[in-house]
Image (cartoon, rainbow, N blue to C red):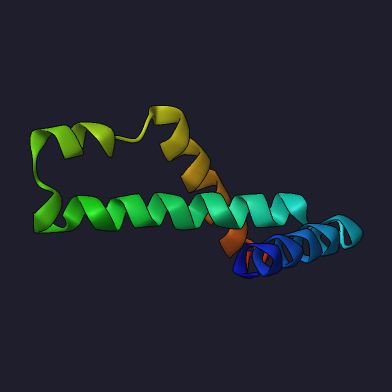
Length: 80
């Protein structure tokens, strides 16, 4: 039953994003939150092993995209 409810909720979220034409805004918000999460993990002492640090490295493209999205957000676009 829980899986069914989860699938229904996801369906309604996707339908809402489609109807409001806000998928790109959601995608940008999701990228920012994921980037910031990885950054927070890197600063946590529990994740200081070399293998973990290797996994948490951001590419130059990811950093540029993050900076551009944050700049866009501060220029009036709300990525709630």
